[in-house]
Length: 275
Image: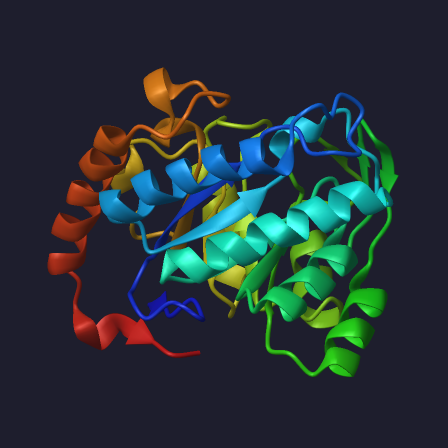
């Protein structure tokens, strides 16, 4: 049964990724906020005009990443850019602050009025190129409670670019039962890498929360995942020539969304759950 992914009002929403240019405060930060914002708004327009149901803003170019963002320049710049994107988007906006800055992202989301955040290690430790990512669920939920905002938390399970410590089943249950995730994300091994449908099926069978596929979706394979998930995060495929550092190509967005509209038209409305 398809589950509604809040705060989206459509079934099986497609979330386009806005990969920001290098921000001030990052190791190779040399771009002004104006330069970053111009490109970010251009990508936003291409995604929205192409038909996506929402966007997620990620500091993808800031590598190498810290485990948690502490640079005040980066946090300030990111906040300004998210604010401008949210004002213009007209659709749900999410935040992904790498590598595992979910607490910082929650504060920014609450202040800017964004709708959801993505967290790489909410309630499971993972080995990553940045070191051991430690769970942040307690700190994050305390902050959300203090700020009194309704920002949703989407948690990666055995996140890409990492060596998981917990098996998939255990990680799933910890993220849902102890991490209190509002939805879970399943990915391939790396950015743009296809997600194993078997992993998604395992998660789907055991999870009562919405399940999102977080990497590797293309126009030629989205139908394979259609019945397995409740939402899609698409970044690399939407870029010119399918290269992640390139600008968003509106034609690629439109081609994938045409498939999505067709698949939605065949959905049985009785198979949609609000839980």
